[in-house]
Image: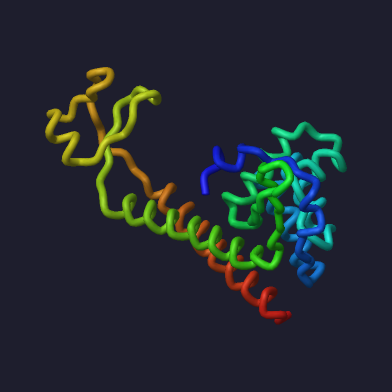
Length: 204
């Protein structure tokens, strides 16, 4: 469902008794992880909205969140959209028969935080591994100008080892230090992933 569709008619107090329970039992570790991740990725406003949903026993509307936080409604909706995009919140809509307007009930899914963290760690790891493969599979050349990009051997040869940007002479670029850093980051992240998995499984 598109965000524009959500921006339709949202009011209608006649459906307030249609709310469903939204409370999910999670550990304190999951709670703190959720708050820290949301704050780090989405910012302070989204964290505030998250806390309202996290402490709610039932579904919550954007207008209710706006009133509780004294936050503009459009800012609340932007925050909810971010949580939705992160797959940490969902919504349910029903039509108020007395007004014909749609009302959107939002639910937080804190139980998804472990999967979310694991997925993000894997994405970063795969990017690092891809970059490492690129660095170890190619020979690079660059000119003396730090603003010019480095190029791979084939591109340098096609241009007769002349920089396309500044026309300077291209010389071999040593990337051993970069390769070393990438390898270290991969080892570090693999250790973090292993530790995270143990924590999620309740292991010490």
